[in-house]
Length: 450
Image (cartoon, rainbow, N blue to C red; front, side):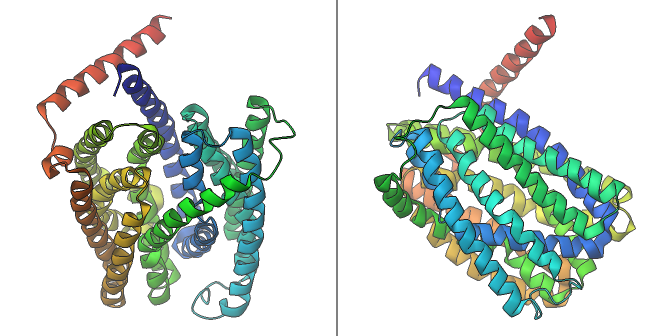
């Protein structure tokens, strides 16, 4: 990797990290405010309804977000054409998603799916979020493809801030409860959609040629995206199968406690998401195998040591959140501690998965995900009926850890790198880390003096 490319990667990672740290702080506030004000029972209803929305979006996106990053980063389609074609595809898929969601609620909403929610209108309400959630993802990945991480991460922060403001207004001030929290969720995505459209219109000019269907782009995006789609869909169910199984066996209150623990735990991996989002287009645009291997190895080693240290700090300090969340959530710190090993290893696994996908081999991730979701389902069905939320946390941590082990050996086989080469910290990494810290300090000093 050239010095310029390295500096660009580090700069993009830094920009992404700073904005996602902001996002994680806002995200923590959002989770804790909703959990505190709603209480564990309504938090349980909120959790299953928003998970249902996320599941619908995952099922209908067809991997279009992944293919957008891939082809935009390779400059095989212009930003304007990607925007227009993603808009049309997004609208079509949104109609499919809303229709499918409506049919599912009508047919199965009275059964085990949502039987513990007194007012089914809350479930129908969340369908209004589907088009905005989907289109926001499709548009945001265009900025990821052109490696404009300033805007890419500003969108993430904007979503969190707008959601938080609507929650404060509708849930805290006007005390609208579950309905208010769901309206805040929807309005946060609507506000983000309007923000993205405004940014696009200001940043890019569109010609008549741009406002046409690009059939070759659509065809190859579908072919590439569908392979990633299957992998990501199965991976998503691997991450969320515990949620649905626990909801079927536990009370809404117990489910709400676990949902809060899971959400707080997953926020801890935001640091690796910042690196992964920069890594995917960088790997896709690199020319040589040696450059790809070196970059991912450095990133995965840093991620491993960082997550280990960070998880230890969280393990020691997490009990302080109980007074903030309230007495409904006494079990939450314990559940987070159980989840931490799996969440930490999953962070490294995501780095390796993004590398494999960027090499044009998303089917490898698919095969691993299928195995993982089968294993996770079995573990959850064994542990949850007996141990409820604790069983879900144990099953999740085991599943994530095993996924990491499998992906590590596959990455070793694909790249020829030794396990120690991309998992264990090296003396050269310490030197690089000191250099980065000094650069960061100098940058802060220049800003302060200016």
